[in-house]
Image 1 (tube, rainbow, N blue to C red):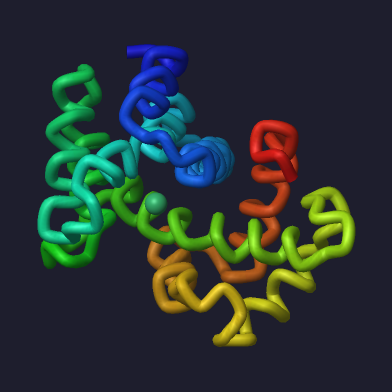
Image 2 (image 1 turned 45 degrees about the vertical axis):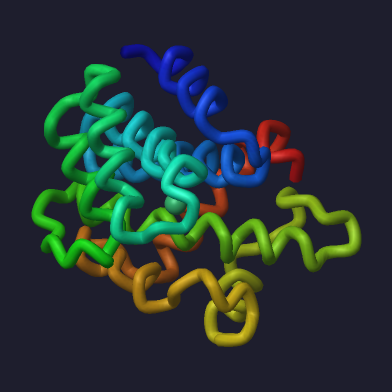
Length: 183
Ligand SMILES: [Fe+2]
C-alpha cells in the first residue's frame, strides 16, 4: 500500500473534511517524529494517516473504534506493527502501548487539535503566524481546546521528547502542510 492508496481509502471512508484534515495533520507529525528518531518515515506517516479511518463507520462507538480501524488497515496491507498502533491509540480497549510507534501515535493524535485551535483563534486563522510559545501557553489553559487531552499530549515523554520540543516539532510539521489543512 502506498500513500496515495492510503489517502484514497481514508477519503472513501471519511466524509467529514475536518476529520480527514486531522488525519493528514497526524501523518505530518508522525513523519516528523520518525525523522527525529531515525524510524521508518513511511510506516509512521501512514499509521498517522490511517489511524481514524473507521471514525465515521463506528459512529462514536468507542468500543469498536480503532478495532475496526486496525482490521481495515491490516486488510489494506499494513504491517502488524501499524495495525497494532492504530488499535492501541484508543485507550478504551485498555491495551497497553508497547512500541515507539504505539506511543508516538498516541501523543501525536491530540496535539493536532490543540495546534489547529491555536491557529483558528488568530484573526487570519493561519498556522504561519502561530508560535510554539503561544501553543505552550494554550496548553496550560485547560479550557482551551479542552478535547485535546493534555495528559495524552504529555505522554510524549514516553518516546523521549520534552513537551516543548514536541510542540515545536508538531507545529513545524503542520505548518509544512498548511495548505492541505486549509490553515
Ligand atoms: Fe485521531
